[in-house]
Length: 295
Image 1 (cartoon, rainbow, N blue to C red):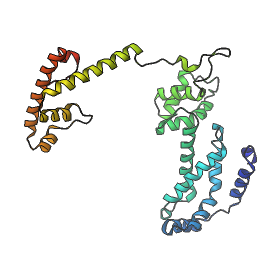
Image 2 (image 1 turned 180 degrees about the vertical axis):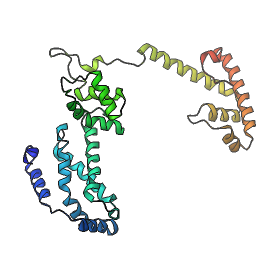
Image 3 (image 1 turned 90 degrees about the horizontal axis):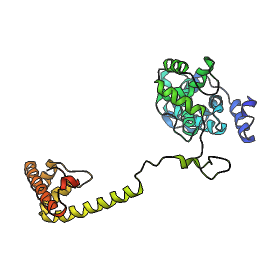
Image 4 (image 1 turned 30 degrees about the vertical axis):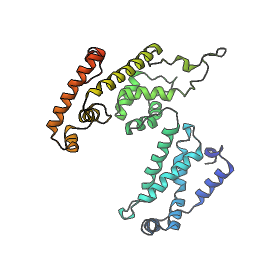
């Protein structure tokens, strides 16, 4: 046990020793403690119950230490799972608390590893989690532990064995064989260029962006000027139906204005016709300019 914690602080080692010395619980006393916590929120019972199974947290955390995360953090996350188990445990089901808590402890630690193993999100589905935590073991089983590159046959074997898509195996294999790299890292030892300089800009070129902004502003001016040809009711309907982020239905507007939805549709159609004529006088063909919806 000491080799597994050789890099921890003296306080952590003392914590482990104390946890390992906690007495084990017999089934009857364990159930009694669980009932006292659940029914009366007896904190002393909770403390005795969780302290007795702290060794389970430490043992489970040790299985995940090869992911490069601090052992103390793994134990801390395991404690979260242990507390969740205590909150949900039902002693009347006649299941040992250690059996029930193991699932919660493992799940909590696995979620922590997935969140912190890499700055890149590794996986969220149950299949992806299974792949992340089992890929190394399965590769060892088929003696595929070379330079990180798996053959297609081996990827297919893993895919079939775990019941996950082949594409997921390919992506996970690449993620586990690589490492995070800062975008500010230099491309070469003697140059000023950085990796982020190689990222393609998918936005519009500056000239096109300026033209789009100019055209959009001009269209807004045209629409504002054309809207002056509408009556207040027509303006209100067009604004709520065509110019709002959450357009109103004909029925909702009819109820608000005290008319039928068919009457709202007629007013809207009439207003759009007015807008089209006004825009033709201001800017030519409004449909070609893309500034007015179909009537």
